[in-house]
Length: 197
Image (cartoon, rainbow, N blue to C red; front, side):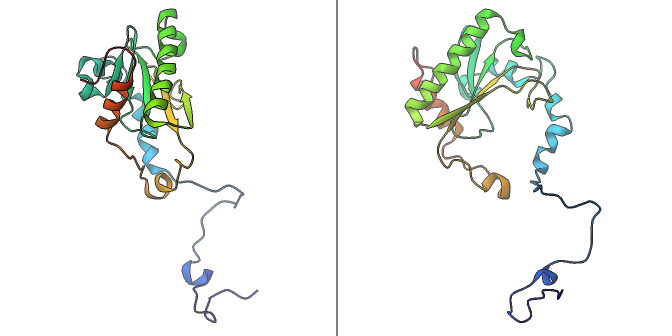
């Protein structure tokens, strides 16, 4: 078999753009998606907040809504914008109590947790008209929780075509509004008293 050098066509061939250095391993059918930015989670990032004193979900409610990106404060739980949103309007529902697991919250907390999730979806539909949602709780470090010590549920609005190559190729997420703008829109649309101030 003749090696493709591309000399005849003027277009570089495989041999022109690769070297003969081989790595150990057997080729398989899997493609690899290299995500070195996730190393922070692997090297202890998930365990960085172990107690109430340094937990952002415990410290957040002690600050102003604007500073902590809180859109609504309930009796037992509150709603906050994700500081690193997957999409604009990515909300987190958090109990005030520092508990790690869904089975740790009381019946009253569970009811408000669910009610705030439903309200978050209604408000996001009103202000940004998503065509779908991702709802989820990552439980424990091995379950993928970024902050495993404090329970929180993600409410992520979704639109057709909102996933693209930017996060994979350029490690960049295109967000169309500032967090402050999104917080104000959601807080103003939240039913009941205005939380925008």
